[in-house]
Length: 340
Image (cartoon, rainbow, N blue to C red):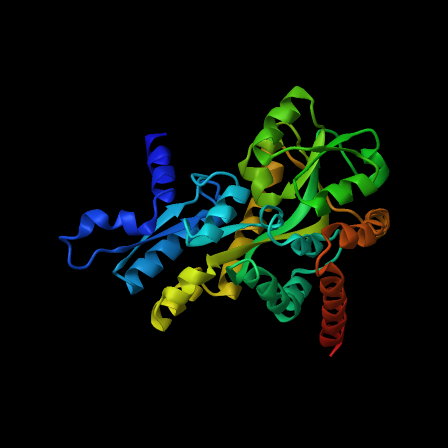
């Protein structure tokens, strides 16, 4: 707790004052704060540790301080600190960054994507440029997407079809896409922060929820909700952002190190997807009942969730109509590329 208090105090201190006591040092190291939330022993944690090591190896004059256990507060607080320049680099979820760029909710539309290959194609070729513009308007630099994986539905009792959730209290995140999906399938939606999910399941506040394989496995949820339907209704990703003014203050060579510090996009995706596959294969040994919907059942889920599309475009507002059109164009381009 003392370390967290110290870090928060440092984040509230202007950078110039941090160096005030270093006048006798001819070459003080440049402190750079990087904020995220990573579960211990997760691949995401390993990627951040690699980021720290890579940057400090290539830029010996830079001292990267990782705040990846929530030391900077909730994601909304972390991104606010990033905009103010208290933090220089931040990674986070679409739900967390939606307070700055609401249009990002459209990337989590239920059943928008069918394969990981489609996700990669559309996100890299059709979504990166427009979202870089939207983040730039907030004083932020979108460096790259970060990988998380498919979102599935966990429950105390087996769920096979949308109608199985009727009368069931299903936890939703702060993402309006997550909330829309749960509302459309007819469940009783309850919005909770992820830290309250396990106690909520234990006390009966919620009966089910939606999350990725990594979060489901490493959070202890399987012990109280041992049914996991592989709905693949959304593909969860995140963002790696930098304060634009800070990035512009760097020399070109320094900037290039930070832009590549998180690793090659294809390599980070491979690492995360390999780890997710390993976790998924191990779940039955932990007493988890996995269920793979049939093609017909998946269509039932898709049909139930489809009405949320138009509502989400209106709710997100801003440039959402333009982003949605670009998504459809990207999906069409993917179908053509996959055929050819």
